[in-house]
Length: 631
Image 1 (tube, rainbow, N blue to C red):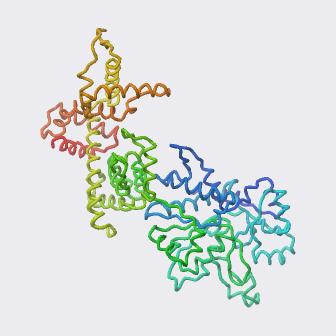
Image 2: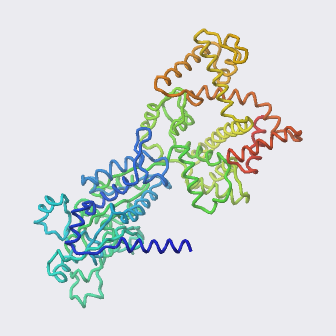
Image 3: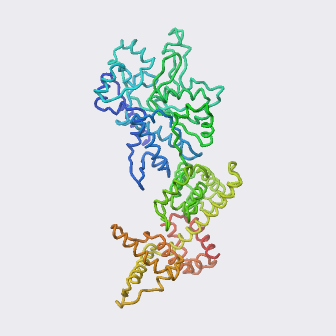
């Protein structure tokens, strides 16, 4: 019954939102809330802004796209700031078709769908309310009733610019139904809806031989010609094309560049002048955002055709590349899995991460910057600290290739391979190795992958496997160390005390006996050797650590376990080196004794409770790490 109560509440909300009154009453609303008379572009921009904006790493984060679009902050910021924002301010950008260009499964359709669903919801709010002349099939702006010669005075009084002319149908209705008295014209509030074809339209090309231009601009209703006596009578015309119905909102032009030319020419006038030709009437005004999407190959072919130059100048192209951040790619897969019937299947930790590592590697370009390989580049893009590189280096890397992210493996391929793994294994759990194996097997079935790319991708699978090997070893070794973080912090604090004493040529006091001793060189070297610090380089490394601590102190920040990447790595390796033999013996023993069995059960319990494994994947992980340590 709960769902029925919600349906009832929704109906009540629909009734509450309904409003109907005269044009004179509507003007009172406009005077009080001028935003109801905003343009379609302005409404879209304000809708995006209303969801909230925050900053991260100097970039604007638009919360409107936050739950659906991952890793495309730069592309989204450019889309909003270079198109929607200036278009909302009535700058010339609004007279352009917005064309989203990018690879398959890159998020273009998702962005358009979000805009359409967002407008539907926004039109239900006070800020996004839309009003139209009642009975108009195009949901025409009531302000079109104001005669042209009075519009300057209207602007002086209301601060609102009126664009567009009254449509042929409403011009006739004004005379015949209202005797020219605009103040009595009935106005109503409308709720934008793609399903009901109110303010949101979608046009998809089909066979050019059978598709009619009426799909865009409407058509003559021949059954009414006898009644009205003429094809030029607006009452004998169906204003039901997508351009008519999308008025006041937006129209999605699917696969626009595949359309026949006769369909595209209508967009020239609509974008530049805000009107289009339909039937035997004067130009019809329309206020709508036109958004299309295509891939790079089709776009290049389109602009190479000289016949398309006029239309090309009326298009603003926004590249929508693939995401290039591993952590965000994981979120894409998680979202796709939640939306499927696979949500009940246990996917072991890091299984999606290794798939994401593989995907991102296929999308990156080899940098000419010294010391940067693809793995380091991948980590830098994901926000990881890599010794010797900073944020400025990351920005330089991003500028090196303007079209980076326009090629590579798409998310759908990965999800298809994960699906294949689940079906094939017929068990409620899959791990990283299952995923990598399936990705590898699928390359042979991927028709669009060349032999050269296939060889590159096989190498990326090997790299992803090596990355997983390190992750798996650390995971198990952490599980073997009770309170790992505390152990790591304690070891680091001990090391730093000795380093400080060494650099300042001081003694160190024994915490138990209080006796003064020389710095523990054996302890310091046992940690430094883990990352290849030579005897000659130890002094410089220790001084570097102290300089970093001082820099943190000056900024009022606390130096902790994660503040120096190489030191963190050294601490990890030292902890794990001390444990390696214990882990190796415990995980590989075919007949574990009582203490080993107890330890294994404790580790499995920790992997399940603290790390997100289930009993199957935890046991698989232990067996795999045992085999790695035995190599």
